[in-house]
Length: 107
Image (cartoon, rainbow, N blue to C red; front, side):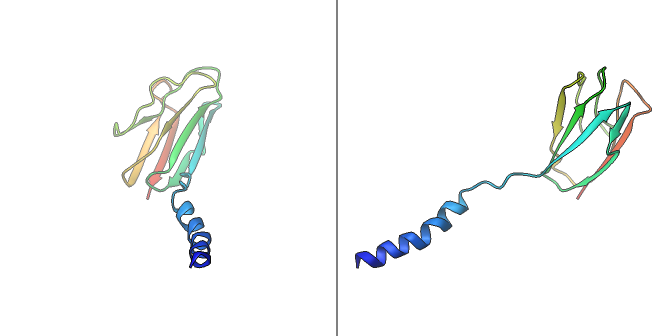
């Protein structure tokens, strides 16, 4: 009976271990550079993380037009992240520089 138990443990253990392994969430990066969000439009799924990285020499914000999110001031060489939980389209911009605009589409 012992060999049967050993075989079951060998066969079942990998399945149990695999079920406890977390699957990393998808992450998207938007670069802020030359007074632009790049890419300017991004489509993603709920629960996927977006990181905005400021490569300009001065601060920017990532502020949703509908107030769904607001990064506050993002310093040069700093970043800010957001993980949307609701589907929809979210236009955003930089509150310091009104010509900077972006869009995220959450499915």
